[in-house]
Amino acid sequence: MTYAESVRFLYDLRLFGAKFGLENTYKLAALVGNPQQRLRFIHVAGTNGKGSTCAMLESIYRQAGLRVGLYTSPHLVAFGERLQVNRKLIPEADIVRLVEAMQPLLKSFPADHHPTFFEVVTVMALCYFAEQQCDLVIWETGLGGRLDATNIVTPLASVITNIQFDHQRWLGETLDRIAAEKAGIIKPGVPCITATDEPPALAVIQETALRQGSALTLVTPLHTLHPPLDTLRLPLLGWHQRMNAAVALATVRALQPVLPVSETAIRDGLSSVRWPGRLQLVQVDRPDAAPAPGATAGSSGPGQTPSRANSPGPPRRVLLDGAHNSAGVTSLRAALEEYFSDQKPTLVLGVMADKDWDLMCEILAPLADRILCVPVHSERSADPAQLRQACRRTNPRAVVEVYPALPEALRCALDDPFVVVTGSLYLVGEAMEWLHLIATPNNDEKALNEWTTRPPAA
Image (cartoon, rainbow, N blue to C red):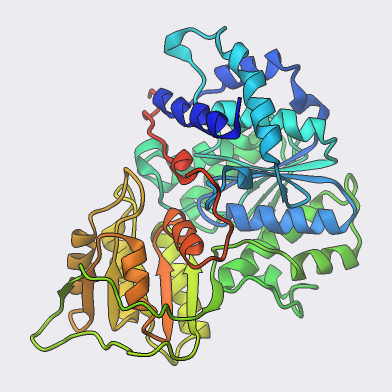
């Protein structure tokens, strides 16, 4: 099997959709010898900040000298981003080998209970981390927690970053129902750490922790004032990242009796953490080519047209942020007001249709004088024409345009000195490819992020 063939096999697993439940994952893990029983985990759930918190935990424990596996999703560009050991992506040869090992095992499942893409990849990750003899695995949930495929492990600690509205169709329409799904990762006697501050959601987490005999640590904004966060400069911008760092730090403190870490390793880990596409600020040269045709301009009055530069000019600043729900773009807006209050960015916006895109536009549109609405390279993309209408309702003074694809919008946007690309991690990954900030795989692996699912039975 070639690597391209293994990617195609994984892509074809999407035909089985995504479903809630642990039966398939338990069975598939048993067929490969239950590698999860030979590993130690920190299990991380939550609405926002899961990936950043995972990256911080990984960096701290790696600085402490441990061999650390990192399992996250979705990926920005390459599938291998999902499975890393000491921040090195799984080699393509190992992906091929693991896919080949999975194929005969899948024949033991009936057609109507075939394992999904995420179930197969989760077990592949367990196999890989066990083979690599990882001392610790930072283990991010996919969707929810209680019935997520990752929930077959018994971790050293359960982390719930926060509870906000997202994926309501599958997790519930209220914060307490969403919290109940996330709190499903809390295991008997295993400590739990959370920064949840919404009272209905926190009440559910507190009740679950009490029922499970789990010591609960509640992280609040005051924790960002504790050493070393009181003096440390994080590489990741934004107040929300300081809260994520406080959650990571509280987790490390809770696990000190099991996984001792020096203060130096904590400081070095937090100060060197990398997590691309989250308030990532870069400088890029404006392309020499003229902006591509095809934009449809829309504004509140006649005579408003975007300015154009005729020469390359100085490098432009581009802020890439994968905020993909209302809570995420609220954090983005706060960061823009904190760090870039003296300038109006050009906003390049693409959102998934299953998100609260109308509210996201309402939050972001007032910050920009010029907004370029684009489709996300996904079956689930929101219509950019609808994004334009929502942005114009909130900010009728802005020049709002629709572009048929992200590259055309970026060619035009980089005429302006400060550009913000946001609305979806998928969009940010595509932008990073186009800006040559990340290596482009030989195969188009972004489509492996696509999924469809059915809500769990009541």
